[in-house]
Length: 153
Image 1 (tube, rainbow, N blue to C red):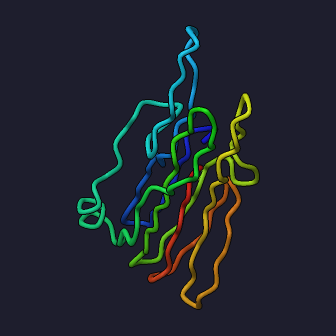
Image 2: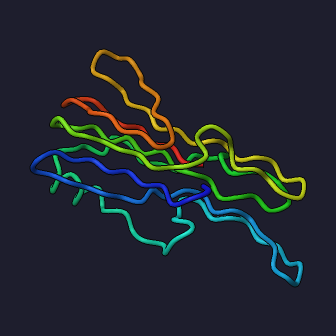
């Protein structure tokens, strides 16, 4: 995923910060032995845990609508990279939301003949049905009922 991706949201009463998991790259040891990447893990930092969905929904006015591995999103090669994730959070109150991420305007590149992975994205699903696409480093306000959809490489 290039860097540690971060999502924050909050208002006067609630504040939340999470690091977003993604796929780790495939690699090769100095001995030449290769290995595949891992799907849905934190990279470029310790492998911290996400807040459990039940705890997230108990402590914050949000609903975790979806969280899944993006099957096939990692680069394909002799050793495949790990797949990224998609996470949809719907807000039950008006919140400020910010994303600090990478690989939104170009995919992670494969090496030594391996294919590129899929690029990530951050989208906001508005109450009127429209979709706003956020930049890699961006912020917005979401009204109650609106959702942020974060995909990682």
